[in-house]
Length: 123
Image (cartoon, rainbow, N blue to C red; front, side, top):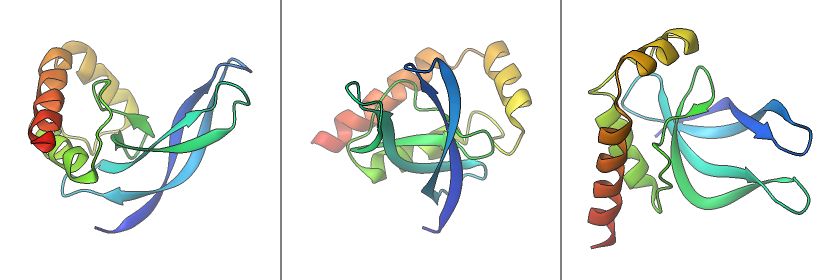
């Protein structure tokens, strides 16, 4: 998989502001989606750190689209990205993606699919 640079959209609770954090991510076969390690703020220092979990992100907006699930392996995040590719056109810009997500409730189906993928990976 090819690596590209994307700015992740993150929320800094200390400063109560949205920030964009540049990271290397892996492109997926689904245009517009990428997979990468989860990045988060440390609660004690608010320093951005990389975890061992993986997630799926809309590359253009830097917004995670992982249904609240952290994937233990990159292969699981990739499978979820491939499933997401059957649901929406992820090449659209952030505004259009958000509008579609509001009009089409895929939340529960996405969460169920993500949990199914993680369960299968644990076997």
